[in-house]
Length: 509
Image (cartoon, rainbow, N blue to C red; front, top):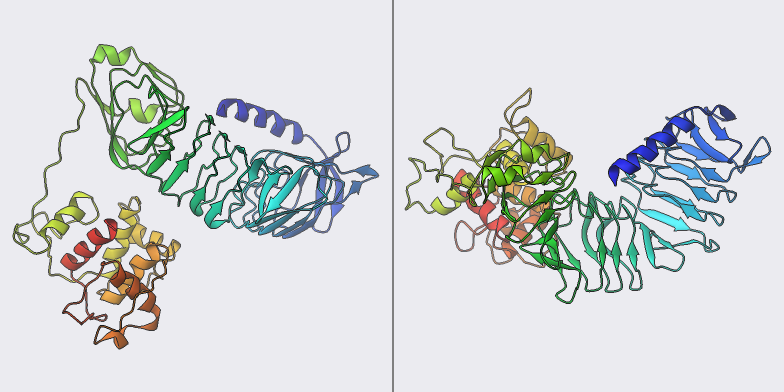
């Protein structure tokens, strides 16, 4: 599918690149194909506002061509005239600053991924007089509201798809900030890459009448750990959070948020294209001898995959039809006649005996790769935790590779934390206070609301205003407990053992 699309796009690119500049506007020139009435580009990519003309040299502008305004990173506002009837594939791709776009009366055809990469686009508004399309809550649908065409990339929080929608189109919902999607029972078809790049989705429910799920529907959903399928669905099923055909012969999707080892159950005969797309945190996969075919690009961008545990012989492995694009799989170490990875040795530290009050938490965070010892033999449980240490721990928890970098040991973790709005990156080597700790955790969790009260603590007045909501949330969820029965000690420094315990509680929420 992807090869075909790329080939088509290449032909289009070559053809439009030969078109001359045919009309001018302030700051640049439109390029225009007079034979088809298609705007094919604009010569000044730094432009912030564009009013597309209704005609050029007496010829009506009826189409906006492939990538005509693609990668116009500064473009904020664009006016589309009523003369336009067609907006072609990728016409406004990666216009990162557009927030709203209006679709006029005459547009009757909108290509695929027209607004992909428009990460600040929150609203697509369709003229009420348009006969082909409609919009609801800023989302683009077909006029009859049976097809979801495009959810703007800047949408955040929850998306409730209206009842009556039958089809979720190709690449229709590529929204990194969406945390929840409600798919109604009316939906029967989910297009290719329909939810690709929804990085904040942790789970999704497939309703009973969905009969078609195309390749890569959930590719790149890096927080997705569970796909649930309604028991009544006759086409698909889920097992251990992964998506399969109903007869369990084909694995369609291992959620990208899966970590560690993933076991494909015996009886599966084929691994579908993009089934393990962008499973960056998978370190190993167990493949049964029943598998006979692995489709194109089944394991793309599985960069941490180091081991494959295969239940058959080397001869049987070599008989599997493995299509191209699976180098992450074939370059891993293949363990024949094996179904389970060797258990990693439990890390122990001389200064953390089994009787230590935080021994379980310290073992948990070190085995998960979140913490490292201060030396090969010591953890320093009573040592103070620094702000930089917590930045790195949270980055690792989010799957970020914090190793390397040209500067300080915490450079990559701090860059990530600042980009995510978790911290401003100041005073990285300062010891972290308990209220700073919970505030960073709270921001990492998405700033959830809390109805808790701190009135039961004698030092509640010492909690800073910027940390109050975070502290309420942490207390309500049992993430942080008082140093004494009624004492929070918000300005007290947190030790490494205390933070290890808090992180374990946070992950287990």
